[in-house]
Image (cartoon, rainbow, N blue to C red):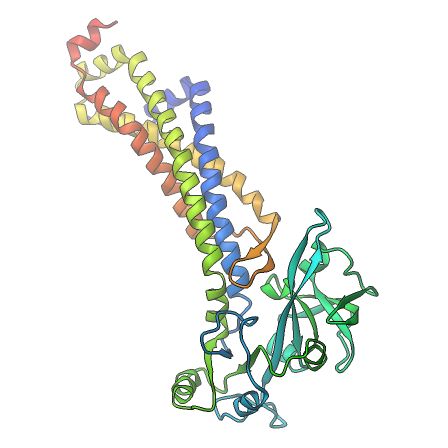
Length: 388
């Protein structure tokens, strides 16, 4: 005979104060666990979405970031001539030769300075980044000392309003616009004219070259040609893969730290669940004996108490997950360990995170309830009834 599920649920309702307290503890642990996963997903979504499937990025061999890289002008010109590169209707190569440097700016809230990437782009750079839109002011004029700031920079840093000027590289740069890049890493950058920034920072070459492939299958042949070309000391990566690599160190740090904290907190939640279920067994000794006398088998008793613990965990998991969904309205700003620059990103909730979070809650409930359930199942009928 099987014990009805309604009986299991009613037992939790009868002990609703204890149930609420235990479920609340589990909800807090689940909230932390979900927050960690959402933070990692948000970081990856921001950086991976920065790249395009159609674009490739050339950087110096051995460089991990654009800031560390250097591509000479003659090498950039050779890249423009490659047959694997797409061209406009006028025959111009879809290639953006860019320079990336860091400049520190004070934050609005704390006043502390943080590194902000300054990217020099040619006019064709916008063609390769269709997600970038001017939301206030206008685009900078090529050949001028004008710059535009990303939406995240405009929200978090002081002195970057339209009309104001920033001083760096011994020049004054006037802010003429704010752009939105669709919640990608470009939102955390400042853009200006590539040639003007090269002159100001006295750079002889570019940091990277971004190009659009003529066909999706052209990447393999391009990679093979580069391996056999001694004139080019560069390597090519798909733009999306490059930005995914940029998130690896920070992503690993967030994951390892968050999972460690979640495991530590979960031990307390598991102990709380076990105490709750042991208390339930102790107060229902006579009830357990009656169930056994009515013909319910030991495995039915075991399953009933396990289900109680799982329902308890599921309730706590659902509450914790629901609370975590509100984190999606927040934006986090931190230093990317890979590039040592500030990056802003939001929490992201995905179906996979929902499933993993609920599974995590159920595992806590299973571990916390298995020993009390075995204790209840092993009780002898006579001893249980005599305890009344």
